[in-house]
Length: 96
Image (cartoon, rainbow, N blue to C red; front, top):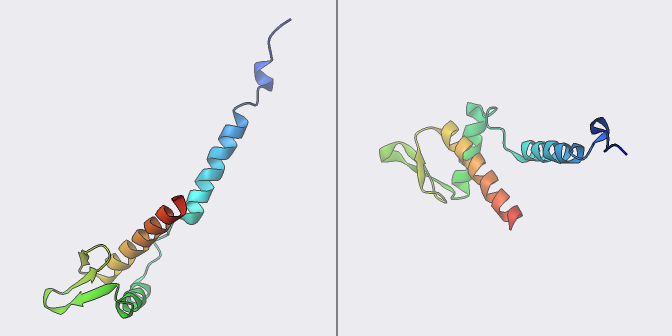
């Protein structure tokens, strides 16, 4: 009796399907920072400053992200960084 027909073998289909689903889940959970314009960044930085997450240092013309200690000279850079930082922190909490 001949072996199974290789054209009927679907054993790897479920693995490919799972890989695609995981990739979609990661994409849906990721933060899209390409759409951060100056006005949005300024609003976020102001909100973070009100929440004591960001400290402006006038003499150095920088914004310090207190949880990480990182300093930025642009509100857009800080907004993008904080979005990624928060997403990374949230991912760690979900993974525990």
